[in-house]
Length: 78
Ligand code: FES
Image (tube, rainbow, N blue to C red; front, side, top):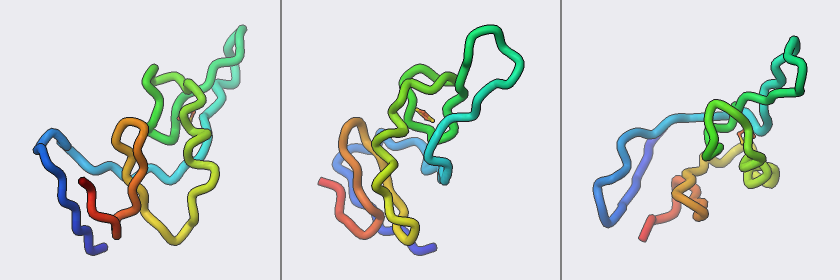
């Protein structure tokens, strides 16, 4: 994979690939509990429904999420 990214600041510490588009349900809990598998939850390890942002992703494109903004790796981040 060839990745070209430009970002104004250097606050991106790592690039992690998450391919799941939904949570992992913990099977034996009293209350249903869902573990984030998409990497976007602001309440990790639990799902906060941020995965809804991934539902229209195309399989052939790798995306980068930065706050509420989504880029694909061919876009230049500004
Ligand atoms: S699976 Fe990540 S927020 Fe739901």
